[in-house]
Image 1 (tube, rainbow, N blue to C red):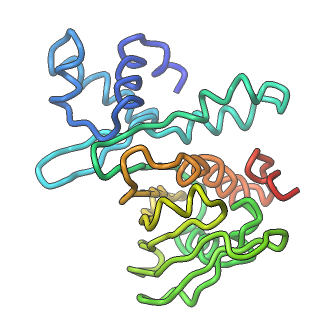
Image 2 (spheres, rainbow, N blue to C red; image 1 turned 60 degrees about the vertical axis):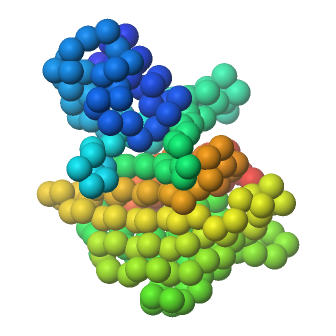
Amino acid sequence: MFRALADPTRRSLLDQLFRKDGQTLSALEGRLPMTRFGVMKHLKQLEEARLVVTKRRGREKLHFLNPVPIRLVHDRWVSKYAEPWAAALSGLKNRLENPMEKVFEIYIRTTPERLWEAITDPEIRGKYNFGVRISSDWTPGSRFEMSHAKANGLLGEGEILEVDPPRRLVQSMVALWSDDVKREGTSRVTWEIEPIGDSCRLTVTHDQLREGANRELYGGWPMILSGLKTWLETGELLTTPGSLRYG
């Protein structure tokens, strides 16, 4: 990751995705003074460092900035005293033309079945999701609720749209933890699990967000996924600003 970030051209590509996420190769090529082949080589290195994630949309291949690796470095080496100075790293945000879509990817040394359990079990979920329990019977069309023992009322709710254990889970979500996020309405969260050797690649896509949506809706994902990886691989809890919210 550090090698990928060391090159100014690759940092420029990340800056372009910071300003506008989900761009095609042609769009990125038009913003840099180099050949298409040169841009492809730099994007490949960013993908290998997991700083860029790609998704197919019809014939187009879209590129998304993935802040999770940077968040993991932050959680390992940045102290709470340095948190205000490091906020810009964990606060990487990107906007798409209507609607907005955020993509997060992480590799976790675990099995698909154990990862699925960690996503759907309310007790386990609370260990890395800021103490928030998510309860449902996890069948298509059923309701799910987000709650915390120290919160007044529900923190969120939604509907289970697709269930294919232990591979894919799609749910709608209405955030309720503040008046600001309530006004954002319904968005969608998709969890995709792919086994890779002795590990799993987990991709979380949060989409159907309005352009310029409140960052509270999606800004916590790097912390949540970092906490999920830490708990599954070590059994320990990861302290993040989000986990201290109800401390």
